Image (cartoon, rainbow, N blue to C red):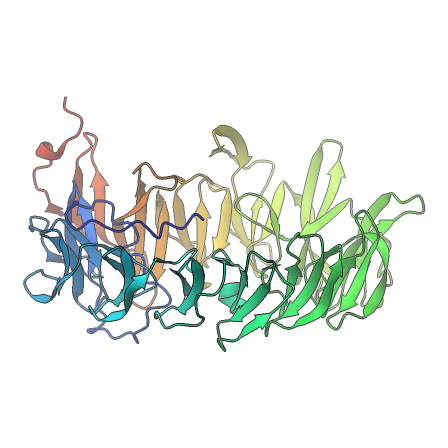
Length: 537
């Protein structure tokens, strides 16, 4: 289990490591947004001293306060502060104590909810200081921004919703904490050591017996389900109902009302409808997802070898003879793995030792990007990342080794270049669909830049993580501090408006000292950085 549910924040350790203390202001804040009630109160730290600012970067609590640690509370003008070995809820300026002596242990869970400890047990407290549960749990944790909490009690696990309300009793040996099905399909898998399996529906709180041990991401309203030993696959709908039994060697990505199937390893593939009926008999070497009109499949030659790719219709007939050397899903993850983008597939022409990439629209049955790019991938159905033979190379570090990759740019569906290839190796849309997020690398210290949909740079790639908080109209920029853990701790280093105006920046000087600057670039603290230099001349 990778979740650090045992890691509480000590009230007396000055926390330039804010961890996720101000990170949980994004989607999921349980209160309706109100300009005054929900004004942000964000901890920001420099030189091992912490202050509090609002969403405009205005200082609410100065850096020279007497508190040992600060964690953002419920973002209504309050913060948790550490003082005399205890956590307390105070006003954002630090002058008024709202709730004293909450606990000597505190850590963020879901937005506006926190884990506290007492007498070897843990409970849940809300951002206004109200106890929601316990302390009576062995542990409570959240992983991967899931909209639920996993708790432990008497050696078993149970599920709480994002507000700490019980969904299930503690009756399971394992609840899958990193679950791609949870966010969109609201389904969580659980199991016992004796092999029993369940699906937990977060919408209805129902616990459904199942044969599915794991679920893929939802596509076209359905999820590919896998057996406990991962040797059999089937299909589940968004209600958690098994609509195709777990009996196939593999199922592909659902799309266009069909899902590809393969009955045995290296066997031919065909397509099923979502009731499990064979619609296109198994006759191809590779079967890619259907769009509204077509799918790309690879011909299976008489000798059993694989031929070329071409489009088929919903009856399984060739639209035109197969001619593509390669084809695959149109998207790419940060690690270079193909990902599904609805209605698009990647097509490839091989020329000796080089490959030229393009895109095929399976909704309309047309090539929309010719095979002329060094790489091209769909960010979404309307925007693509690309590189050409003239693109600069980017040095990428991963797992202790270095390699060179072509820089990526951004174009729209009509082929208009919005951003020239220049230093980024992966580009994606943020969850709001309003910005492009561009990564300079794939290790934990890679930087992220932000562009709007017209290709204008909003936030330069100076920061390791960006949190786009549209409700409060700010972009929070974080860097990691090496604390000895695998991923490091995130530290708030800058605030921007949604249009890219800097509201607050913490700069690190050549000597190692840090200075906080306001929106005008004037120094907030310290005016004289020399006493805080880590490298003396």
